[in-house]
Length: 422
Image: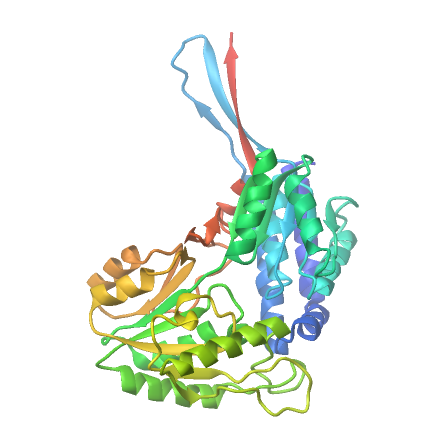
C-alpha cells in the first residue's frame, strides 16, 4: 500500500471509532470498571492516535546525503520493519492498542495484538471497526488468551523470527523477561514499563491548582495508571494547609460506584491481586507509623467488585513498599520536604523514571527541577503529560522507545542507506 492509502484507511477507522464511541465506552466500563465518563474519555484519547498517525503516514520522509565522492549519491530510505507483536495492559484496553497499532499501520506494518486477558473485548471491538473501515484481513490480528496461556503467547511473539518488532506496555519485571526473550532474534523493541511518579508541591505553588490536578493525577482509573502520582512531596511550610485542602476536595469530587451508575466518578481496582497489593502496602505503611487521614478500607457497596476507598496518608516512611514500589491503586501518601535539593534526591531515588510532576511559580526553579528529575516526561503546574502529539516514554527501568508524536512512527521503521555510483 501507499502512504496515502494507509492514511485514508486510518481516517475511516478513526471516524468509525468516534461514531461508535458510546458503545466502545460501555464495553470498556463493563470489562474494566471505569466510570462511563472516564471510559468515554479514553475512547476519544485512543481515537486521537489513529487520527494522528493517519496524518503522519504521509510524512515518513527519507533523505539525500551529500556524498564524499563525486561519482555517487547517498539516499536514505525509511521502510516498514515488518510484522509487529503488540502486548497491551488492562488499564487502558483501548488507547494502548490504538497508540501502538496506529503507528505500526501508518508505517506499513502488520500486527499481532495480545490484549490483557482481563480486558479482551475492547480489542475485539476495535478489530471489528477496523474491518468495517476496509483494513484488509490479516493486517490486524488479535490473539486473546487466558492468564495461564499468557507466557506461551508472549514467548511466541518475542521469539518467532517472523515477528521483527515487539511493543509492550506493562510491569518492569515482565518487560525484562520479554526483552531477554526478544534478544534471541534481535528484535526491535519499544517498552513502556512501570513508574513511580513523584508529585512535588513547592511552597510558592498555587495550592488549589495543585490539589485539583493531584485528584486526577492520583485517582484517575482508581490509581491504575503508569504515570499516576505515587509519591506526593509537599513543602513543610504549606504541608498542613495542602493536606486539608486536598482531603476536602477528595471528599467533594470522588463518588465510588459501578461504572455505569450515574454520578460515579471512582471505580474499582480491576484485579483481586491488585487489591491485595493495595491492602498489603497500606498495612505495612501503617505498621511503620503512617496515619490514614481519609479512606483506608473496602467500602460497603451493593455492587460486586474489587473496590477500595480513595486513601490519603501522612507520616509515611520512605522505606516502606508504598514509597519504593509502584502501587497501581488508590493510595496517596503525602510526605514533607524542606529543600529543593532534598526533594529532587528523594524523587530520583527509585530505579524507574517514567513521569514526574511539580508545582511552582518560580521560573528558575521550574527549569532546574524539570531538568533534574530523572524521568521521561515532566508535568509542570499540570497533572497530565500525555497526548497524541507528545512523545510518551521513560528512562532508567521504565523502558525504551517512545510512543505517540512524530517520533512514535520511527519505532516501526528501518533505515536503509543506498550508495548509488555512476
